[in-house]
Amino acid sequence: MKIYLFIILVSFSLNSIFAQSKWKRSEEIVEAPFTIFKSPQTLNLHTAEVLPKGDLFYGISHRFNGPVSDGYSTFFGLDNGAAMRTELAYGINDKMMITLARANREANHDLQFKYKFYQTKSLGLPLMFAVNLGAAYISNPQIERSDKSEQFQYFGTVIINAMLFDKLAIGVTPTFLHNTIAFADCKTYSLNIGSYIQYYLGDDMTSFILEGANTVSGWRGNGTTPFYDTYSFGVEFETGGHFFKLLLSNSNFLNQSQILGGSPNVFKLDNLVFGFQITRNFGL
Picture 1 (cartoon, rainbow, N blue to C red):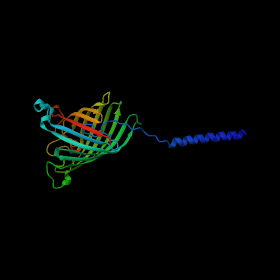
Picture 2: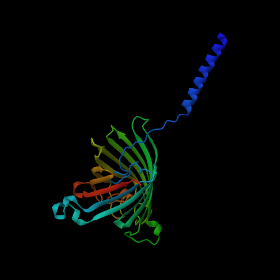
Picture 3: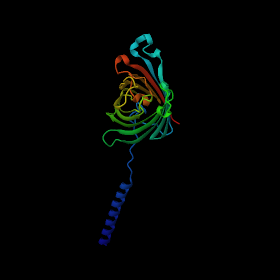
Picture 4: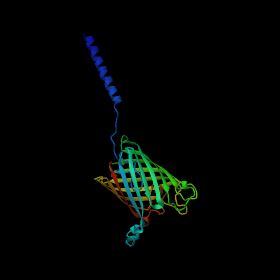
């Protein structure tokens, strides 16, 4: 009787152990979604954030042509007209979005796809990775080309974002740009390293942004005069689905292929222009 009781107890224990082990192996660890930046872009560059599936995103941006150093005589550059960009984006799924935009400078159109392929908190801080691929077409170039293919530009960006101290979001965006200047005498390319930081204040609705786009290799210029790295800084306000950004920059370019090609103005106080961006998310 004792032997039978012993066998029953051992069998029950082994069955419990194997059942528990099998349950552990089949259990999937699902990491809860999180955000690092609140917006899909900072001032000029992309973050790794994408729109939720089915959401629409509309944005309009201005960069005024006159420097703020002109003072009140031109109302700090606002009287000199502005470069304007309008964009519409759509969340294909929770990892991919598509953006179509147009800037009035050279009638530059661009189409972009962004894919967020990885995010984790397992390394001790939130990390997010994405790629952004795009093509631009200049329909009103400074110099007409018989070969219309020379008016196309292509670019690809790897986006790396991280969050420090729950308030400081940082990003690096290495980018390859093909056909940097469409009206140059030869085929051109550029390797650009973008970087930015965004510090969120206590309510997380207001933040400060610093951003730079640095050409580290390849072509930079318009074919006759040198171009310079682009730097921008400003403030972002979030109000119920709206993002409102005010900024100063040494460039009044707006579309990605234009920004990545550099600025005609060196970064200094006399060359800073005022700009703003208003975006709105629509949940469908």
